Image (cartoon, rainbow, N blue to C red):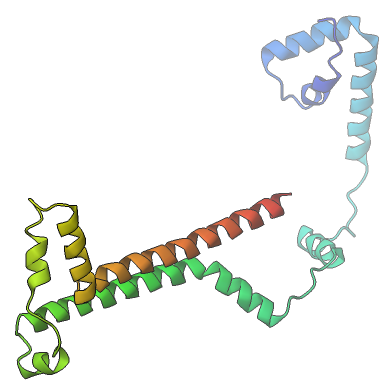
Length: 201
């Protein structure tokens, strides 16, 4: 071994090398004055440390950590409104998910209620709540689309929207709520990504 083994001398002195490495170090030490001097210096330092009594005035590690923590610069305390705004920003995805679930529940319940009222399950209440609704002809037209042309489909779609039933305005409101909530979520995700990148820099 032509290179110096100074990097291995500490482990050699402490008996932490394997047999092969020990043989390499000892073979090198026989012909290298520099490494023998470095090993001798390690032995003298070790003997000196063993002779010196340990000082008893050293503080325990817990006190040392606490003292270092007290000397570190403190972050400025942020106002309560800023912390509340930060928490609201972090909880925005949960709020959007809750808004989507509530919108879906409202649309499903209102659609089921309208269908039940149109089928006559409400009795006099149905007549009072839906005085202007015609019988369910738009839904019947919807099922006869197999041989329809583009004009017929446009007429049926317009009828569904003007009808205002669960297959008309309900579908439009559902689509609008999904688009709005999706856009809000993606804008929050974009702001999170920008903030994350800024913290990394």
